[in-house]
Each structure stands twice: as structure tokens, then as C-alpha cells.
Amino acid sequence: MDLPYNLLVVDDQDGVRRFLREAFTEEGYNVETAANGAEAVRKASIRPPSLILLDIKMPGMSGLELLEGLRQIVPDALVVIMTAYSELDIITEAKKRGAKCYINKPFDLYEVRYLVRDLLAEADLQHGW
Image 1 (cartoon, rainbow, N blue to C red):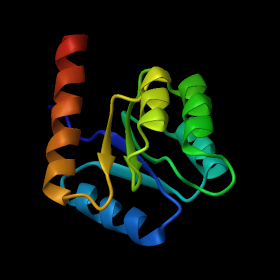
Image 2 (image 1 turned 30 degrees about the vertical axis):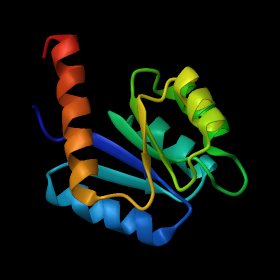
Image 3 (image 1 turned 30 degrees about the horizontal axis):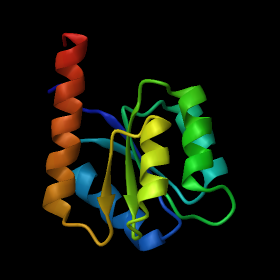
């Protein structure tokens, strides 16, 4: 796996953003964070992420709306939905819009690390890298 990858963490909770930024920076990733949809779109346009960790429930632009906008900018980015709610219809819709998988909050950091590492490695293999 070729590091560093660019990750984008989008969550309206500052604690979640900081926690994931620190954890993935320690792993050697380049990590950007965004507190809302507009900030996420701006940052994804400047530094296209390989993988996006996206909170589905945010004020203003919902995670589903944001997912649509991000797909226009970075169509190949892997998207992992983060949700505190197990709303099957929202998760199903997110997958239809291109989300690779979802994780429930609160999540286990080790599981998220392995998930991200595995998704990026799988994408590398598919691209022949």
C-alpha cells in the first residue's frame, strides 16, 4: 500500500473530527477535516481524497446530499458512511449513491483503521497498483 493517502473526515462533531484526524495522521495518512458540507466540497476540490469518512446526519446539507456533491468532484473516492442511527433506508440510499459501506457510531477505532486500510488496499489491487 502506497502511503500517504488523502483522507477527508466530514462530521459536525469536533471531537469526532479531531479523534479520527489524530488516529489516521499517526498511521501516515494525509487527513483533512470538514465540519459541514460546504467545507467538505471546498476541501475535496483542493485536495481530492482517496477515501471519505462521512457523517450522514449533519445540520444544513445532509450526508446524502453531500455524497451527491462529492461524487461530482471525486467520483472514484471511496466513501464510508458514519451513522449513529441504523436507518436501513438511509444506508441503502447512501450505497445507491456510491457509498462503499457504513460504520455505526460509536465505533471501535481499530475496526475503522482496518476497514480503511483494507478498502484502500482493495482499490489499489483493482487499479493494478
